[in-house]
Image (cartoon, rainbow, N blue to C red; front, side, top):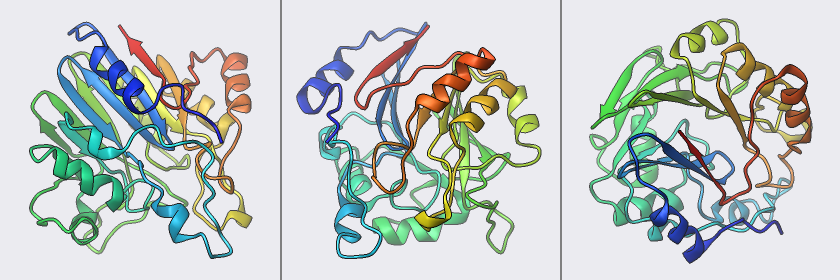
Length: 279
């Protein structure tokens, strides 16, 4: 099994000891689509999946979710979180065994979700439906000085509820002078580049696991597509995600890295538990 660069207490020490400065922010990859963002004293979790719930759920089925990478940290140990986001309702992006302990350890943390998913989120997490902050495509919410703007995501298709609200979103996260685009799960769709380019994204976090009918799950960008999308939206840096978590639904980052090099797109491939600081 793949070992995180840092895990458990070593990971915690790295987070706590990271330089706190208004002139930089730091990102750690937590595996799958999960990231921890720190800017000054604010800590934001993006789509964390920090359990083995899916491995247990599918263990006796014809679609086993065999874990590839060791868990970087148990969620209850992250007791300093200010904001948590979920991009859509799939368990690796909205996991009760991750979010339940996180919310108990961080009772004042704000949970950002697609507004279309409010009832589903409340039921899965057993929380008051009024608690989450809802976002929709093109709309924004703010927690202190961190703003989330919803960007429609096409997880095989752009799915909407009966009120026309998107069930799958990416988020442009704005704080200070920086902009991060966390895609959630998505394919490329008409108008996506034009939607994202005006944000002048500093760091794009994009999936690279692609799509294959035999997996029987909705697909994502592959490595080449992710590299080209980052280039087309003029992202200063792109970091891949959504790979090396489950054996049946992964990809190598080599194709992504090769395409970034070919087209001149700055990139960084992180190991699980590794950090990058952006100044």
